[in-house]
Length: 331
Image (tube, rainbow, N blue to C red; front, top):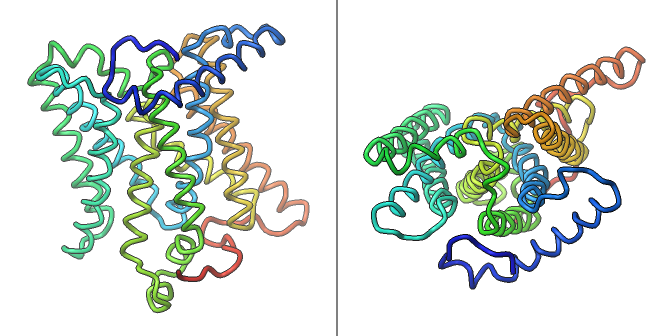
């Protein structure tokens, strides 16, 4: 088992995943021997690369639904509440020595915030952006308040949560991310048709008997899980970019929902791998580099879409015009 610096109550449950992380490291050590790539010689980077690869799937998988529902900014709101969850975890560990990963408390707080966004919209008839703004400001205010109360113990290491840090992806946090990855991918696979129907025609979905409110809540909770997972290397400030930028780039060169989803995952994986590599060799913050690479890829996708149009192919698709494919059915 990969050694953990501090014992955690979750270690017995996560033990099989620690074994998986060891196997992953063994594979990357083998690649290091074959290729000589310097970044493959460090085990903490093995975990960061694995987390990045998972983010490259999770973020576009959920982001594609969000962008088509015009909820692109919900990632920012949940990232700031996830920051509050991290602050809660750090505060409890400092005060009562709880010994729980701050990312675990971030999962709980972010999911509660996701539900709160939906509840505010449903009960007050407020627009989604109003409920998101309320939750965002409340979450960040809570986080900064907890940090200020115990500034000596919390403020020193808080930058890693704001901007992300490759070197702080612990075995426990990587294992938690793998669990989140399985939950997100599995849930989308099981509810894809219903989520599609609700995304493109909410009224018709409700008439057909699909519980729209329930699926709306499922989507925001999945978004919360993605945000917390990506926060490890992206940081609170930049995490929302991975939900939006690859999806926007894919929309420029793909005309179907399924095609856009697959292309957005490819673009996100490119951004993550290139970003981690550049950040390692340049000594830069990985989150910022990954976003810059993603934006550069988006620009290239826009150019490719314009060239495609100029050459007389079908007009480059827009986000609102992407074909959803087959019509989903209710359970």
